[in-house]
Length: 239
Image (cartoon, rainbow, N blue to C red; front, side, top):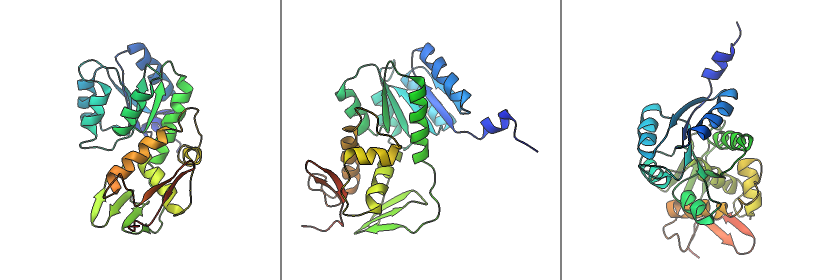
């Protein structure tokens, strides 16, 4: 027995493309399906939420400027119940758009016009972050426990839900507590490649981590900044 191309494709993750430009949807669909992914589409924000609930995709490619509901509103709604990875599409190279999207829980962003091959590489990178790790002992740093195998994070008795990118960044920091990582190093560790202009996005992910992990995000005990250098994970003790 051997796998036909249809059988191989059926094993790939399902991806939801959300864009009101049908031409963009068709182009992205063609590249994803050629790579073996299953694709569903939605053309406005309300439809996106309906299709996401019904199809339960492994990842969303989400335009921010949508009719009915904006991409930001779609992400706000999604993050109430789901940590499904989201790659944002934005028509403007506006740092504010990117920062807001990332702080709402986006995992990555791509600026229009874009190279479909780069978008495909981003999809692969984000999905790699969601793959279960092999068996290994949970990592404990103070009251913080990171279980890579189960993809679970606990602070004391409280379980914390993280996006794929937030979890990946925390896991990198937790493997070497006290070691300082620059933004560029974190990008390379998490994505496998540091895309130009994306370094500052790490700050948004760190802000989200602090909001979810820290008793007081303004005075972090765990994810600590070394000004002018980068970030490190500490034991959570009050200084």
